Image (tube, rainbow, N blue to C red; front, side, top):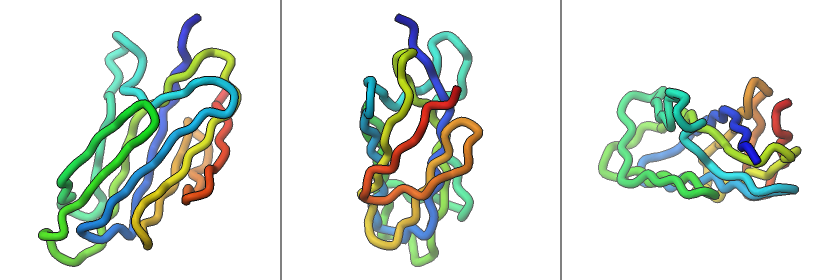
Length: 132
């Protein structure tokens, strides 16, 4: 069975130095996972870009179900804003999945799947439909 891939952008804003940011992926009807993109495609993999100057990361990791960041409290006081561009991979019969965020208080997270409008993601799992 061949896998399907879709581009995903995670937009993070209003994060303060020293805060933790996480986005968790869970399945609805078929397994789905974070990915660097289709094999042998020359995809850009996972990219992190900042909208607020420096991004003082102390850790960044991706598992099949989670993307997590920790920022340094040593970096000063201005709010942090950044975007993560990645992919999701699933089997061809996928229709939907859920995303949630257990980020620290005040952190705003929204997610864009494919070309759809970004949706706010919080602690309650938010349903997303796989692009056709």
